[in-house]
View (spheres, each protein chain N blue to C red):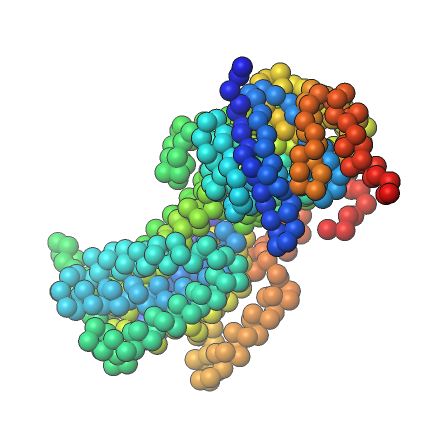
Length: 256
Length: 331
């Protein structure tokens, strides 16, 4: 039995009286591709916000690679290998697509600020390499041709794809994808699905929050269903989609 | 190589200027402009991480007092006084930055503004150290003899002029390198989207504090230089109005460049403005400044550095080809 890479222990997040997440437990194994689904407001994005450190005050514990990461800052968590693709529009809008990706290569840097300040040959070499790496990252998301475009002017779907490339620029071992397929065309959806499969093959653990249940069922061997901040199902897609509680959560239940 | 030519020409012109005139009034204007240029570079560098410091003059005051006190009380030479001033201002910036940069945004601006007032009030009331409103009278650097050459800082303004040119050059090189290196990319990332930068592994506080401390260091040196030049250091030598002046010079010069904009802003507003005032009448200064600010902000939002680009009509972002313009979204 493989050791879980990510362990979530009794995660509870309150906003005033609202319990966005309650006593949420989950173990994720190395290399797993896990889909998180649930109706609107069921706590999916909150879950990501806790893991990535966006919210630092909550109850419960997050253990990543055997070490406790709850309470750390987002940059410390990113340094541990967790990258996140935001659900909303999250880019450096004032600069080019390529520069967006290059900026996210920060964690790949081996030279330090002093070397970069004095423009040493190692730093210059790294800059050239990093540019090439950034261009390479744009290839699989189909943005290579748009690399010089202004990120803020990209159509919505492309922003999501760019977000994925930017998250991958941090060399993650765990990727949190928050609705990467929302608002993109059918072709681009195929692109994202292929990319996710490729990442899984590379051994990157992927957590996928998605509204498109069909897409998730197709690619994720394991599904977790959230409703009102609770985990109501966890298992193989065919089990989960036939679960009565899941159907009730999605379709509602007749009163009386 | 091409990029080196304009700054090199600027430097040569600056170095040759005393050959044109050694008029003490004109040189004084330029020397003061140099002092402000350094302070404005610091302000703009901080601004380019997205933070708005309204207390930069306080670091000039700290530097000024630090240098004045050690040179007067301990008899340390002016040159070491300058370095000491920079270090003291940097230490204060570190202590202040670690606490206050957490706030960010408008809160940071307010606290730095208040900090400027605190420094002034402390300087006014700590009679034992600063002699209050009477102020301190630091001396000019001593005469230097190199072989048969004598450099006298009292007889002529030229030595001071060369010192400030050198200081501006050093500050410019440091801020320029910081901007062009990875640090600059990090600063731009933070300014552009803090949340994203943080999630991509950038420790926001670390880099904000770094630039705040660098800016504090040079601003402190500028303040120290100024008080040895004017031979006076009092609580109102650098006050809130001066912090606002730094802000105005930064905006007028343009914040899109970390070195050229501040130098242009300082030259136009400090030297140009003061010259105009003396030519017209006392009390016109705020009016002249006000008009310049309004004209620049309305006609050239990018500041005076944008003038060249504006005239040549070169597109600001030349890489928009290839963007499929879809319907504008509502955000």
